[in-house]
Structure formats: C-alpha cells, structure tokens
Length: 173
Image (cartoon, rainbow, N blue to C red):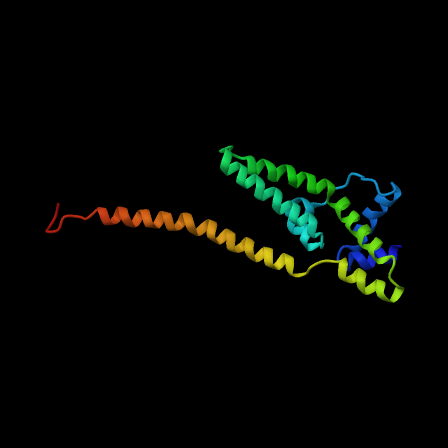
C-alpha cells in the first residue's frame, strides 16, 4: 500500500505526505487535525497543483460568488473575510482533502493489472509542474498592474497641475 501511495503522491514531498496519511489511516480514514501551509496560502492553486480539480473549481466558485456578493450588496470586506476563513479552512483540511483524493485515485486503480496500475497512478496522482510558474507569473503581472495604475494616476494629475500653472512671461515678478 505504501508503494502505491508513493507512486500516486509523486516525488515531491512524498515522505511528508506519507507521515500525514499514516495518521489518517490510523484513524480509519477519519479527519485528524493537521496544518498545511501551502494549502492555506495558495488554496485553489495548491489544489490544482495537486490535481484536485474539483477542489480548485469549488474554490473558484466560492470566491467568484463572494466577490459578486460583495459588489452587489455593498458589504465591505466580505471578500477579505471569505478569503481569511477559507485560508484557515484549507490550512486545517488541506492534508485531508489530498488524502481523500489519493485514496480515490487508488480505488480507481484497484481493478487494473499491476502493469497498468503504475502508469495510471503516475498520471492521476502527483503534481502539475507548470501551475506554480503560471500562477506566479500571473501574480507578478497583477502586482505590476496594481502598482502602475496609481502611478499613472499620480503622474497624470501632476501633469495637469503643471499645465494649469503657467508663470507670467516677461521679466521678474
């Protein structure tokens, strides 16, 4: 069973997740409190990185809904509150979500022959290596836009102020 866990998890952080999964297995698959910093900080992106597509779309739907609800209702900081609560929730439950995902992949692989099982587990488990690069790039672009818009506004206003102020020509004041 450990070998199948290792294959489904992939090479990255395997021993870390094996220790965490052993705690869930000891409780017969029930939740055991744990903390996962990547799941807390990156939530849906972490889920996509770990090939938990449903969790990624749940995350996207929740934040889309609350962003719309905040705009429609005029309640300030609803989105921020949702972000904080979801981050804490993902931090506490991220390992369990991943454990359940890997257990599901292992159940799907059970009817396969030993020859077919390993490639199946490698394909369905593991990580998507391009996810951190793409979302990191998008984060940098977002930060650049967030910085450049106020700068543009500042320089645009200062240009208008300097155009309004025209010193009188012709000698000393």
